[in-house]
Length: 133
Image (cartoon, rainbow, N blue to C red; front, side):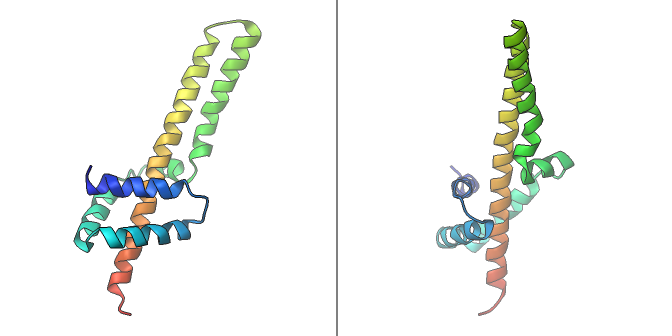
């Protein structure tokens, strides 16, 4: 497992905590500062910035992944409702497709949000190194 993957896992672990972004970044800063050299931090940050998608839908998914997945949850629910009420097995395909799309969007949003949190943390560490005490 490479350094970037390890740091992304640490960021994903912080996302599971119910706290503010500032507190998550503070906890990540401590872990990263102790375990990763500054040159490696810069390399990881540049790699993450290069891999971060910049299109409009990706930005929506990063900031509000539940909202982006909501229409697909609706399609899944509607397919289930119609499949049960009209006894049409083909309507269950909408349930499967909508549910799979919603889960995929939320999983992708989780990964993108972890990347964004890690980038913010690495930028704060860089700013702290630049400013003398």
